[in-house]
Image (cartoon, rainbow, N blue to C red; front, top):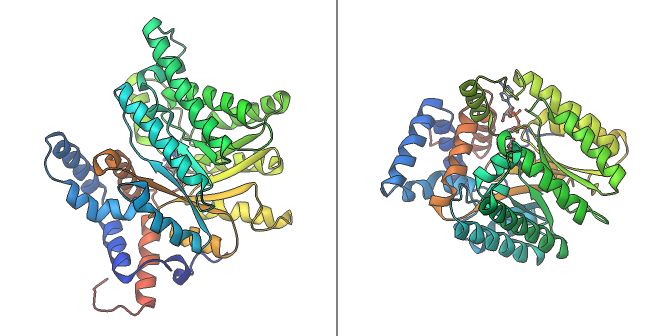
Length: 391
Ligand SMILES: Cc1cc2nc3c(=O)[nH]c(=O)nc-3n(C[C@H](O)[C@H](O)[C@H](O)COP(=O)(O)OP(=O)(O)OC[C@H]3O[C@@H](n4cnc5c(N)ncnc54)[C@H](O)[C@@H]3O)c2cc1C
């Protein structure tokens, strides 16, 4: 697998778009700038200062499909022509009212409606805490009893989630349930398992997410597969390393409790590999959606497929990267026939800012793959013989 093929990687990018990506990655590789910038943006939004325009022209354009799902369609069709599928997400986070949660439900249902009409959108996704109060997920996760009012709100949350899963499976669109902070995850795990039990009888349409930066997830995976075998349902696993490392470590420091996160990047990588070693031999029962930009993880899966004489387009394995990142992986895999799907968020600028800040922070972390992105974009700009800009 040649991830160095930059012609293929950036086949859809104009010279101007490549420049923008280059300068953007260069800026967000600076941790201090990102940390300061995030605070300024959040404060500016709070005081309704006009920062949306700058965001729209820069970070938003790089990492989002558009303001509305219809705006993303041109992009999604172009990706599809390159054998790269997509899944769209109305990327609103931090809900504080029932009306916002109902709006998120409506947006998810609309996205499913949109997806059912095209083979370019085989998946949809939701964040459970966008459909219910975060505080209730936290209480449920720690086993705290809910009062009458809270129980009613929780029942409404479950109904919203059930509606999303039911509607998606009715229309044969696969549904991914995102993983979130560990202090709300027990409740999400329980719901995701219930949804798989209910809707993954004949086909694997509901996927739960496992974050392998957590020390306890391998054991959870083994138990989940065992329960599914006993209760006769299929499993879909979105396997990721995990996006909330700073928040997780800060919280355990504040509370003075041991961190749930692996002690080093190497330990996370070993944990991730161990999960792959467990899932792959059980791939008939447990479908894999590999959400990763890590080349070694992807090569590990490809080699396993090859050794087991599976075709590149084997239906139970999907590779997924975020829109605006790791195009060298997505486009090179897709050109060899592997099943690839890009996560394409959309929504009003103000709503997607928490997502965009997370992307910027991820790209500025020490262990990020930004230097790799930068060197590949630079290589492609050189290949296109663009000399007038100083790289
Ligand atoms: C399609 C897709 C869907 C995703 N969905 C989710 C989701 O639902 N929930 C979620 O939480 N994340 C999600 N992510 C983000 C993901 O968890 C990672 O943050 C991101 O992809 C970077 O990991 P990587 O596998 O690409 O590779 P790498 O760049 O090799 O790994 C970076 C990751 O390693 C871990 N890490 C880094 N330093 C350390 C350290 N010192 N100690 C321990 N571990 C460390 C962290 O998890 C970090 O994000 C998703 C990613 C993709 C591509």
